Each structure stands twice: as C-alpha cells, then as structure tokens.
Length: 112
Length: 109
Image 1 (cartoon, one colour):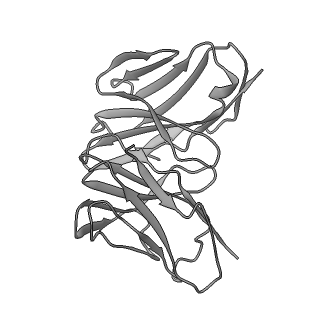
Image 2 (tube, chains in turn purple, cyan; image 1 turned 90 degrees about the horizontal axis):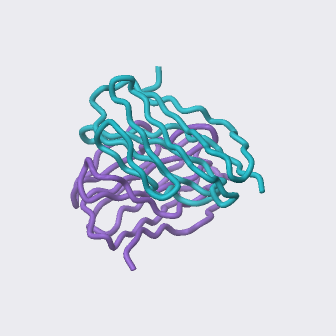
C-alpha cells in the first residue's frame, strides 16, 4: 500500500532543543517537500528536494535543516534557531516538479 | 498582494446545499490547478486536478477554471456533513506550488 508516512504524530520540544521529524515515502517519487501550516495561513514551503543528495531552500528555511540521503526519506530538523517552531508540519512528494503533491498525515510540534 | 487569495470562511451550510468555493490568483504562469480537502489534524488529500480552462466533474464535485479572469472554483452538490473540512486551492507553474490559505466548510445535518 503506497503512501507517505510521518512520525511522530505529536512532538513536544523544550526551548533550545533540536528535534527531527521523519518523512518516508514508498511511492518511488523523486521530489519531496516540507511545509509548515499555521492557523489561517496557507502552506509555506520550508525545503524541497528534487533528487537524492540535493535540496533547496524554500520560503522559510531559516532555523530548519534537511538531508536527502535516500530517495525514500527526507527528514526535517527543527533547530533551536527557529524562533517560533510550534506548528503543523507536512511532508509531500511528487513524481515530477509540476505534478500534484501527495501529503503525509503531518506532525504537530509544540514547544513547551 | 498574495499570489493566491482564498476566503478563509468559515462557511456554514445546511445538508444538501450547493457549496461554492473560490480562489483568485495573480500569476498568469500557473498552469495546473488543484483542490485539496483537509480534515482536522490530517494531511491534505487531493480532490480535483485540472489543467485547462473549463469544467471538470467528479461525482458531486466540479472544478472550474477561468484563466482569463484568473479565477478558480470548486462546487459541491448535495453537500453532506462528511464534507465538513478545510478546502485548499493550489496552483503550480514551473517548480513551485502555491497554496491558498484554505476555506473552512461546515455542513450542518
């Protein structure tokens, strides 16, 4: 059963800590994306990757980092430099850059 | 000015009503237009995908694109309580997809 998985579903972080959000897909898609969703706002692009070992900053990359060592995996690290990290984080993938995006179930991060 | 404008609602309708959801956009380079449905605390799921101007129908859902006016719509016929969700429009051109803020829809039984 193909799809995108994200873990954990809920994550709590203390201020000053780095945390890593997992995203795995078995759709054989080349491109993967990380978005942040805040109430009343559209999805904002954090990072995207079109191919293994390559990724680009999106509109709000400051305070975040990613890696793309495998085609199936695109983890996102929220660093202590991100000043307002509490949000709903969504991972997505596409076969190609102009194709429709398929989303994972999301991770809700709360900073305590 | 935002590239995509979408009324956040909320929009509340009785069961069985016809719902009209809309987005306007400013970038004429957008070529592909999508509608996603997002239930609370879930990831968005693709509902409709269109390329050209005109209408596309899928069951109770109709997507309409007017490129000359830079305006897209989603119509839901015979709305059901299970349609209660946030509906996001999205459009893409080149390597970037832009999402609207989403319209919250409540369908009352």
